[in-house]
Image 1 (cartoon, helix red, strand yellow):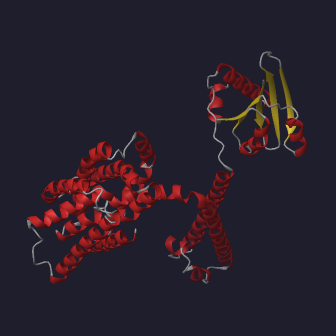
Image 2 (cartoon, rainbow, N blue to C red):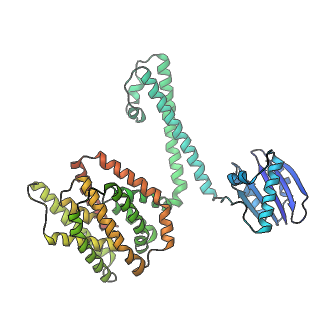
Length: 454
């Protein structure tokens, strides 16, 4: 059994060798060339354990030597700094420390350092592409800021948006700003436009390499949409939820999504807690519970697609009635009959139990009540928080769709939900009352049409 610690640099590497029993060590330095690697390979055996510190060339180096040895561990740089007590660091000392650590770890069976995972080559390539992409983006921003600064020096009132866009650049090029200023601006804009072309090519290459991982990419993207839905844009879930259903399956997705939806509801309630219209919530909740019971009773009797058609037709009819009422004018009071609340409450409870599809149903009901935008969002948030909490026992005990595994997976998506929630709050503030009502109606219409095609 042989133990090797390697201090790796960009053009050479130093190795420290130790045996299983004797404390005698040997050190050697090799050039990071074909000849140097060939010399190093001759020192390895199938019973060699290697520890190498994580640096820029480490992954490629490890791929070369892994087939020749028993095990290669890439050590976390920060952990090694905490372990090492050497005041003076040289290549030989660092290699010796690594060698001692790997020997102690293997012989004692206790983990001294945690291994850095070596990602597949395609993931390494994607990381490399994204690093270049960030560099290009940073450079384009710097060039745009420099153009803006030059224009401000001469009191030209171009905004950053005009410079960041492309339609006003020709106007900027033709300014009478003097030869030195014109030279700088034209050179910066030439480089900027060249860089933008390269960014487009780089984006295409990233999409090409990321194609096998689109499933993983769509999940966090959909989580942002859920946060956005809960803090003001009811209807987007009809786009996000089918994506998750396609990836994980319809039944499994309902259990996976429910804790995430509840977390998003809590975020929305925390912000809009004082804007709820409780009289409408109290009208809907009892009938929604009845909708739960109906969904459980007919669970195995109604095909999912037939359910979608019935639900979509009902929402569409409600939308038509609501638009017709709006056209007639606001003089007539909102619907107050018990059967109106019962119809939408049962449909909402039924829809949310089967496939988290109650968003457009409740949107039509609350739009019919002509609530201001903050009251609309606050009432929706409280209603769905209560309903989703009531659904938890069904998912856990009756359908067995929620487990420690699904909850753990949901925790990894929390940052994306928070991002979407914050974005929703900011957008609601920006949109005027009348426009907001039209946006919600449009999203509800789109989400209803998606019930027929997804």
